[in-house]
Amino acid sequence: MTFPFVSTDWLAERLGSPGLVVIDASWHMPASGRDAQAEYLGGHIPGAIFFDIDAIADPATALPHMLPDPVSFSSAMRELGIGDGMRAVVYDSAGLFSAPRVWWTLRVFGMHEVFVLDGGLPQWKAENRPLEEGPVKRRPSHFTARMDHSLVANWTDVLHAARSDAAHVIDARAADRFRGEAPEPRPGLRKGHIPGSLNVPWTDLTSDGRMLGADAILGAFERAGVDWSKPLVTSCGSGVSAALLSLALEAIGRRSAVYDGSWTEWGGRDDLPLETG
Image (cartoon, one colour):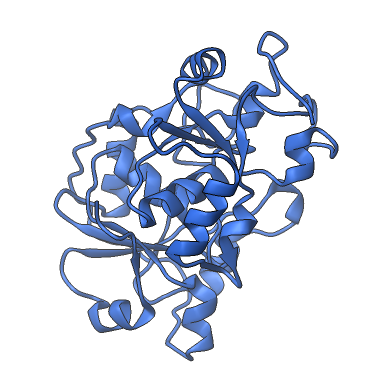
């Protein structure tokens, strides 16, 4: 496993290097009233392209920003100018929120050298580093999507885990949502959690837009009851902060899969079991 973060100094020294693509992966919750793409156009790291997780997604499902098929993904990467053999640095405008989703997506489709910018855009700005306005158009490049199914879980995988205790499902939502005491931000979803799942709120792993250190990450998962001998699946509301949990696990040398449908799928179906409390 490769340590998944790079520093702003590392990136600043390599901006414009051949084979390096910088990706703005900013995304905001639907009720936030913010437009991530408009913010990108107003100022981004020089040369960065914008990766829209809602556009580069499966159009055949009503679930939000689900993974597309490999052919569609290859086509989208070609248009963005992301090609075979390149390495990528992903960041977001929150510091650390949605960038892990794109980090995970690129790895799912076979890109090996993908890193997250430590501190993201806020850290870059705090250091008075240059910004660029407007869109960035890279030369189209061939991307061969090879899907790594070991990094993705679906509802049948999760149901098996819930029934057999063969794997840990780790939920990144806030504790009150996990317990079923707070309403879900997306309408029409049941309240509660996947039976047998553990709760590690993503906010417990970050501070001021940055990932905590290895000891703190390890402690958060162990306090939740993680048995490291079991396979790990991360979940959340719609597959965004679940990827942040997977990034944290990667940072301490642990591999995991993301349940792509997460609670939007599970909580939206009456035929799947749930627990509260």
